[in-house]
Structures are given as structure tokens and as C-alpha cells.
Length: 108
Image 1 (spheres, rainbow, N blue to C red):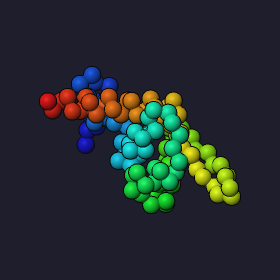
Image 2: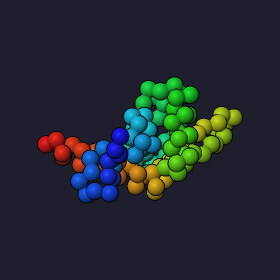
Image 3: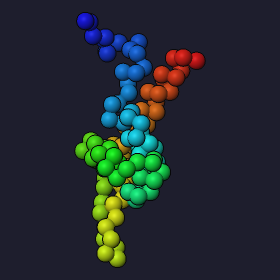
Image 4: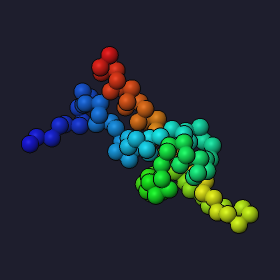
């Protein structure tokens, strides 16, 4: 089977999508954090309707890719995790949005 030539200026728009970013939950996490404010783990979990384990798995992928930073703080004996988008995460999200716009534009 012949692989498509990805160096062509006429490459298919889906080739610009990033597998790390494009997954629905990870795209949601990055979107919520896009403006740069930190968000508490529980708020992310409730907003995206995820279990603790599911959110943890997706956060690990994004942190390992350098797209998010995660910090833990103890307050009144309770540990809380805060998540913040990195400049690389913001750039990856912007690139994903641009790729999606190109894909949508190809169908207008």
C-alpha cells in the first residue's frame, strides 16, 4: 500500500491533526485551559464529566507531551491538583484549531 506524500502542499487536511491533542477529552482539557488560568482537577472532572482515573490518564498524556503543567498543593490537610496550559500546549491547540478550520473549509 502506498503512503500519501505528506510533503505536498495539497495534503489532506486531516494530516495536520495531532493525535495527542485531537482526542475529544484532551481537546476539551486544552480548550478549557486556553486562556492561561489554572483549573483545579475537580473542576475539570466535573465540567468534562469524567472519572478521576479517566481524567488522570488524559492529564498524564498531556503533561508527558509538555502541553500542560500539574501542581499539587496541600490546604487544610487536603491535597488539590491544579492544571495549567504551557506555551507549547497553547501553540498545539492553536495548530489543531487551524487544522480543523482547514478541514472544514475543504467542505464548504
